[in-house]
Image (cartoon, rainbow, N blue to C red):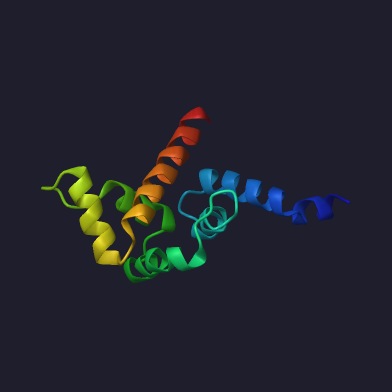
Length: 112
């Protein structure tokens, strides 16, 4: 009976959420969470992000934070984000949504 509970979609999403907070360098849990109906990114919209994870050997969490924050030291945050999202081929609205998601993750971490 307990095994059936763990196979339910909502429970899997909750487990991915909790594990992504507990293990921030583990990309698979975060990928499952971000592409779940609860968050709503599509696997297609995450392709450039995952490509960057592979290329840079960085965990998904780190790449998402870079996208949300930008990465150029001499630019404003908005300009950094546009530059970073453009270089990865991410749509501006997706970059903004990633920023919101990363902010939400930080909020939950602070509550733990």
